[in-house]
Length: 279
Image 1 (cartoon, helix red, strand yellow):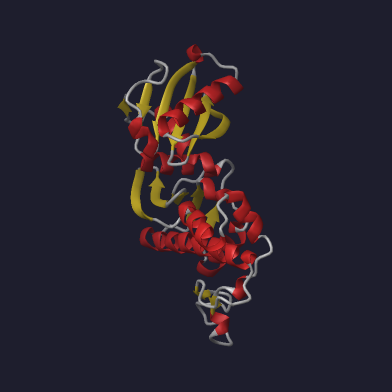
Image 2 (cartoon, rainbow, N blue to C red; image 1 turned 180 degrees about the vertical axis):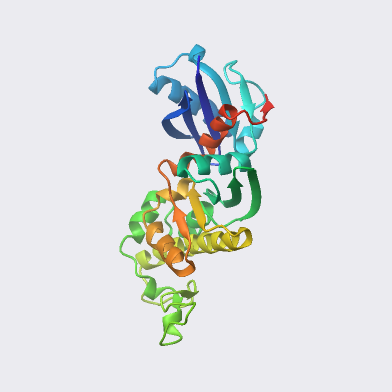
């Protein structure tokens, strides 16, 4: 009876991860039509896959917007509810092994926090995130599936969509290279393919998130950013984020298991003895 389970109950998915003697194991996620079904479905799958009994679990720690629907202990196991911003920050630091960083949680929308050894501060957020990517792809391309968007964008060409500094001037300035985006979708061509548009949508989402992360680093004087959440799985994001790194001279990390950072943070808050609300 030493295992602690962390659960992040989001809008569209629930992530769950286990900790045993401080070591993380078996991160996984489940989709369902409503939060309670998703929470219990994720927990049921987790104990089944790991061949656990209820008696093996010491504590469940839950966070996320879906956790507000949970009014009683899960299967009678002691269950605590923690602040989502705290969980984002602490989970991001744990996975990245950094002492201080701007942590970015990219889900349906995007949240920014500053985390260090003294705690977590919520900076703010933007409605631009995975919901934006799906919504724009639906209305512009009639493509509704996340994986289909990624496949469609595979051979996309941003020069048929975005207006860059190089389209306006011939030389890079000391601050703006010619490849910097002057206007997302500012040069949309009649010849733009579905792949071009799909890549343009992905670029818009990740550039917005990246630049807001840069603003956050300037406010707090921190050079490190940690990306977490579901959008870390988008392969096209790597090149976009690298360009933001190079342009603004910061370091942006995407740690292993980044999509589970908030669930990780919920679990380790119990292990670290941080205050939480008992359900």
